[in-house]
Image (cartoon, rainbow, N blue to C red; front, side):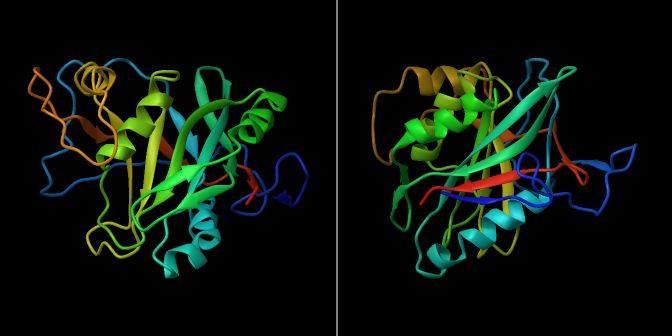
Amino acid sequence: MVTLSFPSPSLSFVESGTCKSTPQVSRVLFSGPDKVHGESSQPKILRDVHISERLMEDFTELARENTENDLETCGTLAAFLERGVFYVTTLIIPKQESTANSCQAMNEVDVFSIQNERELYPVGWIHTHPSQACFMSSVDLHTHYSYQVMVPEAFAIVVAPTDSSRSYGIFKLTDPGGMEILRDCSETGFHPHKEPEDGNPVYEHCSNVYKNSNLRFEIFDLR
């Protein structure tokens, strides 16, 4: 187990030096011609989620060797809940088996153990597309369903360093449309999904996720 633990074992990184009394927070929004990931017509009210952009950058650096070898890398994002807001404070990179277009976590009991010890919620996951565009594959959607069915605010970060239009995206399944499609789908491997009956896409960009420059975090690399 490797833990990046500075300045302290429990909260290991402060992005901008010292914590200020008023955190510098910016909303994560995406725009462009892509109409595939529109907003659901009947959105549920979701709690806000704060995440450090530096955490995403550090994950990308830890995944660099795999990325250079065209292998995916994945990790779990865990958060604590305070006053109705989720704060992502922990990235856990499990032992895993990877290919150019898939990543399978192993020994997941180790991930659960870290989360349980710190009383954290599994609010999402992050993975790379080393040579593909920034999107959610059918396999990614099934993986994400297991998160979002537990925590409605759960999100998926796709890091795609070779995508010239956007290097990363933050996504979730539409609800109820996308969630129902994935709930009723028993296929495995890469396969197409039908469009939800409500006319919305299967997944969309998150609008409740914010970059918080003052969030401290820790990383467990269990590989």
